[in-house]
Image (cartoon, rainbow, N blue to C red; front, side):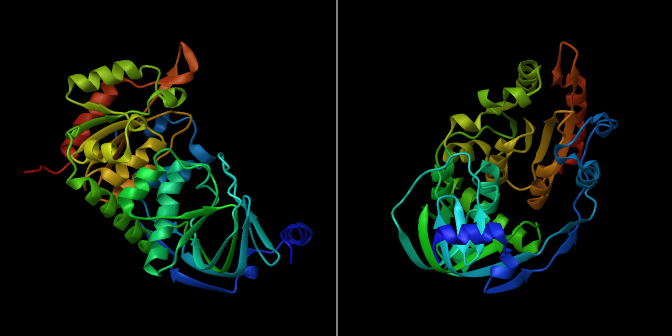
Length: 352
């Protein structure tokens, strides 16, 4: 069946992955898991105006550490799969994988077995690539399956992440695979958590003996110039306040992954605006740090709490208020930030 015919038939009568798969097995069941509660100044959660994805109840559960359901991990096997452009096909099943940076690699590749590294978001968001694709590739590595992905331009930090993790992937826009494994791996169940922590151990282990100065125990993690629209409007003043308290500023976008790892390897308290740059923290910080996120009141998002919890960390936040001089932006109250730092310092265990 030609690739064009597969697409036409899929449009006329779509076929699901479950129907198209040669086999499917649950390799990790769904779980209900809870974590430790967040630390924050009373009244901060009530200051939230809106949340990412519009699910305030979910954000409250995250903040409280309440029990939440996590999906199972399901392994699907497709026979005679074909990658063409940004699409994957097997029989009448066709799936499109969007990417913000497509890259044409037309040399035909043929593989006997492989695991698909790409998912619906890994070509659009660096954080999902780091958390999703690399963790899937670890599952494939344990089964001696090479990783294959939909061709795209690499994320700026991708080569460095691959070097530190020891994981590799063959990207192609024209590939035939006799037996392709797809992992539905969206739940942070125990199986996912074990692989995430293994990846974290690999990354941290790779930078442990590298030369260079760490930023020490107090870190302000900056988004750099690309994050201005999501940063508080008084960020310069906040950075100055933090630096007077002994914080050192780290800007991941200006460093290589190895340099980021060296800078963050002694971090104990990290303050940062909420954003994808926080993914670097999870792969390089030591166990048990505190993360204080500076939150846009219209876009509150506590997703990173679940990751900090995995390695014994403490999550905290300060919610901004709309800036009266620029209502589309927000400010963080310095006194609330100071109070939050005091709460976090009291909650962290004393280290020898």
